[in-house]
Length: 224
Ligand SMILES: [Cu+2]
Image 1 (spheres, rainbow, N blue to C red):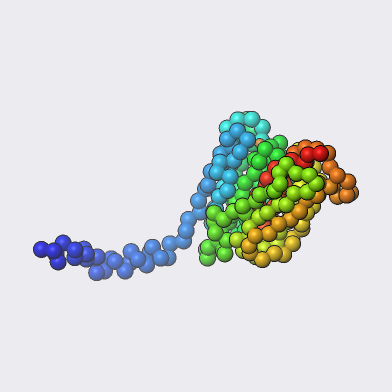
Image 2: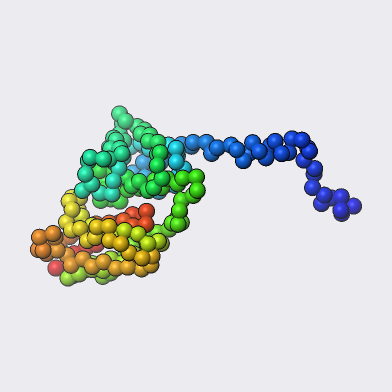
């Protein structure tokens, strides 16, 4: 009989409300998320977690660090962590207690792109930025002379910071500091000069853009 076959099985009239009440009242339990060092990268580099969760970084080979911040120019004061990840310090754990995005990198391998982020969401969700949004950072022309345009897309209105570093990790030029911009495509120009206005040497530079809780870097080559 068809009507019998599709009839849902009845929940116990007394237990069903109790089970539902327990499920609704149960708080999300704190979780531990593992990020593994693989060669000169973190895997996965970017994680989305809940407030109260712990991230554990796990060493596999070599000498690395797990350093809070966007780049080497970040001040030491106020860092959440700056831990070694090496044969004598094979794991590092940190519990995130406030919502927001926390960036980290490996000091020796920052310029090899050994960076990552932890986005901490509160109970109401991550906010207006999708978890897998990107800035779609790209620089044209590249290689360049005399200037290159750094294009990026903001998924939400945000303050934007952008900086250029040389191959040794030194800050060459601050292109923007908390520049307020609307959602959408934007461009910043770099004319190949340092803070003193002089044209930099031929070579590879790292352009980093931070905004809307995202951070991306791209290499550009100055040629003469
Ligand atoms: Cu490293």
